[in-house]
Each structure stands twice: as C-alpha cells, then as structure tokens.
Image (cartoon, rainbow, N blue to C red):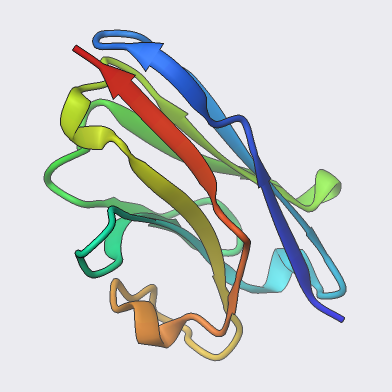
Length: 125
C-alpha cells in the first residue's frame, strides 16, 4: 500500500533552518506530483509547495517563496522541503502528499490522494 513518512521537524529559533524529508513507498514515485502542505489547529490545511515528477517545475505559496525550496530524489523515492529563514508564523504540522491523477500541479488539497502523518515544526521568536 502507499505510504508517505515525513521526518525532520522540530523546534528551531526564528531565522533558523530545517530540512523535511518525505519517504514514499508502494507507488511509482517518479511518476507523480508531490507537494507539501501545512496546518495549524483551527485552520484549513495550507498549500506550501509542489514539484512535478521530473523536478523540472516547482511552485510556491507567496508566504514561503524565496525561503523554502522543494526538491525530490526519484532514485531514493524521497521528497524534501528545505526551509530557511524560518519565522514564528511558519509553525505548523507539515504534511507531504502525492497527486497520482493530475498532469498539471495543483494547489488544492483535494487534488492529492495520499498523505503522510505529518511532522511538527515549531519556530520560536
């Protein structure tokens, strides 16, 4: 079965960096669009970034553009989110997700059909 496992979250001071990983299994990882979302309690899940199957195209939410970088290593079935210059408002549970049906990357959470369990990122001021 399809499984996505995030890791790399933690507590960091404002201005610091973290690198999240998403290890995928049970699917042909290199064929699908991957994305990162985040969610804080009481709010809807928010799009962060996505990447096409080849890694040739990426898209970011305005709130993270220039600070976060999404990438993937298809040989390792793993996607990454490098987060630099973190801010307290980046505090959230971060989820990776896969879209197995689209040819064009989308930002709506409903487009993604498998999700990881999430990893907590906390940024202190």
